[in-house]
Amino acid sequence: MTSSSPDRMTIPGGLRRGRLDGRYANHRLRRVDQPTTKITEAVARFDEREHGFFRTLRGDFGVVPQREFLRFVDKYPLSGAMKAVEHHLAAAVDGAVAATRAPLPDDPAVMSRHLKQAALFLRADDVGVCELPPYAVYSVDKNGDPVELGHTHAIAVLVDQGYPSFAAASGRDWLSNSQSFRSYSATALISCMLADYIRRLGYSARAHHSMDYKVVVPPILMMAGLGEICRIGGIVLHPFMGPRFKAAVVTTDLPLQPDRPIDFGLQHFCDTCKKCARECPSGSITDGPKTMYNGYEIWRNDIESCARFRVTNARGASCGRCLKVCPWNKADTWYHSIATQLAARSSLARRGLIRLDDLLGYGKEDGGLQWWFDMEDIDGRVVPR
Image (cartoon, rainbow, N blue to C red):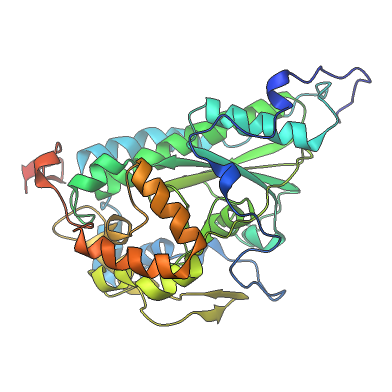
């Protein structure tokens, strides 16, 4: 049981400001009361074992995908190394809470700013806070155990997968898994440190990263004002990084002030664009309209064909072609910043930018920028590809 002191810490000057010292101009985003994705009260909690990769491992999609799932990360030495190191962070997601609560300011807004600034200090590229939606907590985890967290708020941290590597890559080549684990491993480390920090302050906190999630990440990102649901498999697209990021979450019972969802015109953009569907090598991304699924109105894609292609890709390690070709996957430049602002404000500008993306040749790989070797680990022997 924790106790509180009547003496509170002095609020430092940097926490009296409304803006964070972050990478992006989030203060310019349009905040809304409800997310741009329609959500009904009928959202049921999800069984983690029903995700595409877990179903692949279970054998739902055939013997070959089941076998290849066991090696599709390790078959490229770099992504295998990243996964092996991140695996050690599975044991760091939770821990003991300090017996006495620190005399923190009794102000949820100050504590939200403090923890978000701490996440940025730990090298997150963006961060947001929301009340933890009950439906965002898995009903059952990957081991078949019921999940109950007892937490009220969530802090989501994002790390960019890196534009330069995407400029050089096709999205479905040998670097693909490494691009994912570049951010998975970084968000895992940040979330574990942030959760540990909160526990040392006397509040319960748990990290959720790619080695041990107990929450469904997209609705948390959406409610925390970090993006909108897009056409690509129900994932969240960030207004500045596009879909080119990975996320981890910290859930806690520390009182925090939530951020509000954002609207930067993405629903109309994705409804019009369809470039990811056109470029998807497995044809898994729909070019049709949204449909209702488990209380969400989303673009519902073919989970089986997506998972099957990613684990059995013989010419690469996984696939992120949709991330590569997305018009929101751009470098941090002044002219792309202007395009982002125009897209957020005008449906006419959105249509023009979609056409311009193809005319300017975006989505093609620049082989002159490739720095990685095309190779594969087969039973401990690395061979060129």
